[in-house]
Image (cartoon, rainbow over all chains, first blue to last red; front, top):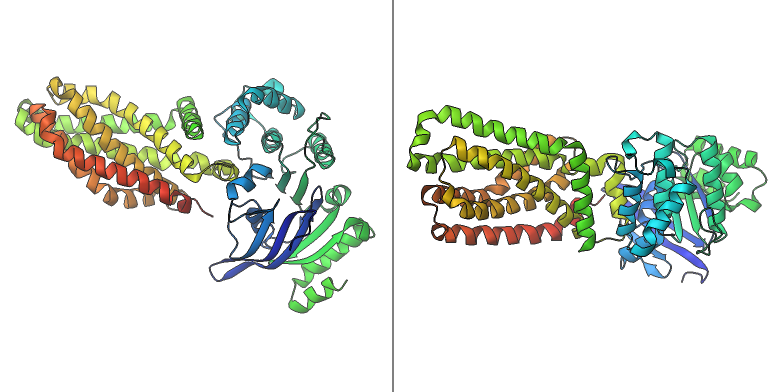
Length: 264
Length: 224
């Protein structure tokens, strides 16, 4: 049984694509409001794990329960709770910034009476209000990424899934984005102190320093396994974590190596 | 239902801004009509022969122009991961299919609406049969787009999507194209919609089957 304060409970999750196993027997409990960073080399299974949590792909074996809902039984119910930010912007280039946000507001069944206000507020908070009526095609990569962040936060999700969310963001925008992430963990809406749900955040990244600063818990995945799972407070320093990570990557996780890391 | 309309409206808004699909479909369709009218020349003064030649010409223009447009239908969704963005939303997958079908059909109707006057002039067509012709074109187009939208989604994930779509689509379209061409021929000869009831029934049945089947299997065509 999942522990009562878990918002995400993953049991014996395996995902195969043909004969290739992308995830091997993953077990993971994530508490409400936690901020988790997921690291790992390319092909480690990080994105597959996120796609399963977001109910875009189904597990081959095992269960994923989110907020007491099994993703196989009610994927649509799961998606209502999720916001996703990726290196892909999920934006339509021929629509304006505002049109993109309004379109996705409708997709998330948002109340029509609040859409305009919410869209304006989000556009202001990502510094795109003045360019709200310009086509996304004319935006720089960083502007598109900022708009993509606004899109993910439109419906005030309970869980934020992020796959390389810093793509294209400059220092200023990255700093602002981090503030949003930290506020979300305290139940504060973007930029304001509006009452909102405490947001659980899972972020795939290669930026160890930034993640170490922000996150509560660090995971390392390799070859479809979670080979490291520790709270930040139990890790001495970012340097120690980096060394651990590099040793895992260098070993390329043969079975013995994985056991050693787990024993750390 | 509303989400379906929002998806269709989003597609049409995007398309009317660039007119990429619309222009290429229209130009292709008009070129076909003009080339055939030139090559048939004097034959076009004989109504009976027009009834035999023109339906083929008209449906060649519509199906090939439609295939051209359909091949672009999911391209915009694949760019920037937009389809994944839609899949992450709490919407029924069939809403995406219906929305795309509506927008594709709408674009094809526009192309047909602009092509038919040129066709009427160049093929010396009797204008009295217009309502019957419109009905046949509507049903034929709807069946074509119902299958085409599904196959466009299926082929959009492949590397050879430009080749894959016509290869898959054209054989599957035969049950719709045959009654559509036959009915168009009959209408062009005498303009009486009463003569084409059996073809209309056939088109209605195929449209229904393709549209319902499309909704049922669409989820699997866009699965990762």
